[in-house]
Length: 289
Length: 193
Image 1 (cartoon, chains in turn red, green):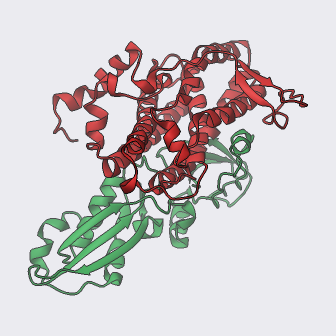
Image 2 (image 1 turned 135 degrees about the vertical axis):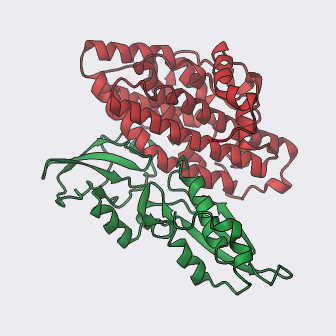
Image 3 (image 1 turned 60 degrees about the horizontal axis):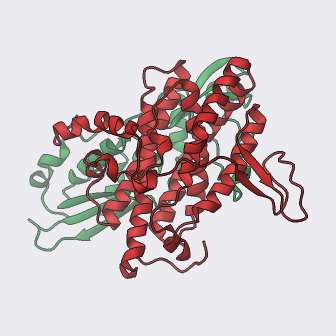
């Protein structure tokens, strides 16, 4: 955030307004689809505690999506949250590809959840300082709620990563498969630079750097690894231990991120997911229960 | 929960009269959280404001009442139900109109739960939340802590602080599951937020 001048939506130029809308839409779509994938464990969890945990995190995430869709409806001229969630075709979605990938096995779901929650906690933490007050307020509220997700995910990743070869290998395989798509969470939305200049959002590249550090620290405690390298700053020798690299060191990933979601370029999995998620509303928009 | 169906017939039943904020707060104390039925929405700390305006020309005079409420957890499925019951309860006082707004600022904290409500929770074996901790300024640090820097939850049965968290998720979004090493009982707690 480069400025503390409050961002006034009413007097903002049209391009900043459009950029803000794209940014909030990506927040909403990430949350709703992650929540929907979590909900696919309801009744099927490998143990009762995890069935309950994933169902609870699904509830949280769908609540977070509602906050973001409501923000768009109240301030940015979007239709109702239900319209946004249930009447939009795949090309209109701005989620990162990570959250549209199939549920997979439990290891896949746990690793996705973990990478996602660390990213969102960092993003919401930064957005608490947004120059646009409604964004700052919502981000602060949702950041608090992430606490229990982080607690849950990290406990299980540590336990299973260090429990034995089978559980370790399943987590490592899931991590290898999902890491590029997780990096796609930091694909900037259209016009992000304009918002960054106004202090409305933090650059995605800055969030990504924090995320790489947090992820690497957790993996180090769990016997797992990801393609994250320390690029030593001039005069520095980072050894990669713990959360902190040496002062001035930069963390980089050595793989290409799987991007496109923020531009509406999705896998076929999203279409199948939307067919299931939207079928009831599309068949009877007045349905209540 | 105590004023079901009160909204529909209230305006014709109650002739015009001035509504006081005290009367509105009192009736809100009769609306309970459906997931913790011994705790009112007021004692839960989710009512942010009560605003009463006189309405000129309303049938027999009257008041427009606005209630600002805030969710505990934003994904709480009881939110809509509480909103409806709050509107019905206030309408039963004869308000010409009732608006219930959901606001997020300032965010709810479990520290707002009233002492009487904490006692009521403990009485049914639901541990009230320990003081909530705030995330730290350094996100990397707060994300990599081995355990939250939160005091342990006191056992609602024996009061022991020698308890462990079995699962941060429980039977509802706002509850976690614990075990007491003192009296060897599992118990649920209202989450600190």
